[in-house]
Length: 166
Image (cartoon, rainbow, N blue to C red):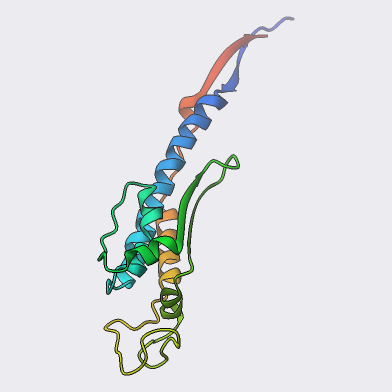
């Protein structure tokens, strides 16, 4: 007895899927940066512009504008780094923000009105938003909450079937 039949041999368009995945991840990390920045900037007051200016480099990578006074924004700009890392190394999509601005770092962890930065405004100067800002933790929560909502592209459109007669 002889039987014949057809089966489907699936094929995945890996190049097509990787292209779609790369596009989706680039969009997702840009939106994640925006969510992170929006939340972080809620915590950073705009006295002289220096602290808020530390976020300009990162914001510019996604075309976002950070409003700040120009009084001392040059200090924040020169004391910061911000960049996107897109698929480098392959499969990694990240962003980086760094600052060495002393008073922003101090205010991240301290209430400068009760525990003033010894290198800055001596008492009785009072900040209207003295800290601790805790912007790193708040930004992380915004990032995590956004990341939970990200869906990867479906693989289904990239799968085809070739009929094989047996």
